[in-house]
Image (tube, rainbow, N blue to C red; front, top):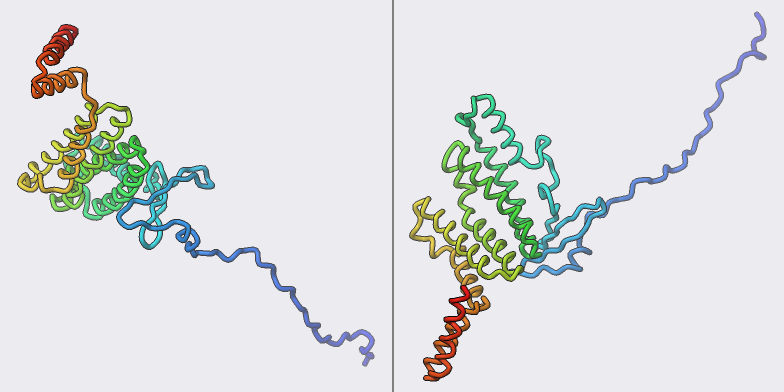
Length: 281
């Protein structure tokens, strides 16, 4: 038998391998927002909001609440999502309606919103509600009107297509508050343009729309006690008190003062001025 000692390689003992510790490439995320809240105090009873541009270049709004803050996009759907590829859930259901109408010879008969549809539309409407409250505080009246009119369209849509009146009422019960916000935004926008007459008209229109809503739902008896009506009426009184007098109104007031003080010479002059003003008209 041949000597195999020269060719046989006995098994060798494995050498220990020490691996270097892997470098950490992922930074531990800090979820604590206390430093943000400490620099921005919550003020009970006030809408504390700020607007800023995020790193992605989009404008954001932040609303300070007692336990933290809410952040939302300043445009589009507030949470930035696109339900079913649409800008909003409302627009998705509108697209469903258009498709249904096209398939049924122009009729919307049979198109219904299920309870879960109404619930999700309400949740989306609440997002827009939070935003237009913030925008009203920031005095961005065109954006308030945009969002408020959008929610009003949602209420009408649900009111028409919900499976039951009860489902529709879950949203429409907030319509008086929405109409008040809309009247305030339109009125404030007119005041900014120093058009007191138009501001008064917007507030009066808002009051009539709110009262009409209560009448439509057989609650006309509580309309004047509603906080929305009382708030707008108080604001209307303020606008009227601050409204600059027209030339005619100034002369009529001067005439009244002259008569009360028995200054008949002054009264005669004011009457002449009034006649001249009427002639010019």
